[in-house]
Image 1 (cartoon, one colour):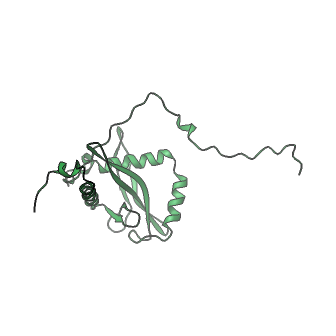
Image 2 (tube, rainbow, N blue to C red):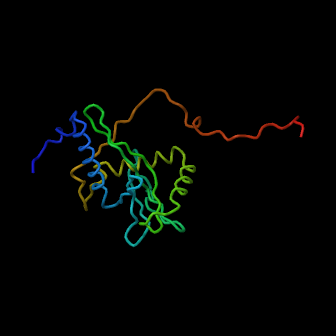
Length: 195
């Protein structure tokens, strides 16, 4: 066995070495969350498992400056389970590595086996969710994946991969949230039309 410094791989200009480094990062990500989550190979996503005994799983976290009331991340419904899930991609920008998190859902029949109607469930929930819902999911994932949230008196943070939240972007301009909401179509004025 030969040891290499991380920077030899992470800062390499060799595309093969960089690809190997990303493979190591992906494996470390799966290992880091493996005590709570499973991997969906078909969709390349990690999803929360139910609590032992097939009980709903809820996690609490700090959202911005206050404690969140928590979020069900594995919840049983009539005939299926909905699991909070995320897809990820590691991206190098100059000499820094970032992870892009995309919140999503995974659906199972019994907490383990895929639900045959998972695509329909996902489509329905995506139509129902608004930007604030997706933002809350992102905040939950950020809190869950960052090192400070992983460590407590019963367990230590995963030692081979750690994340810190990206700095917030500040701008002195923006678009009001209510302008982004879709406008519902109204029927055209039919007065004066001959039928």
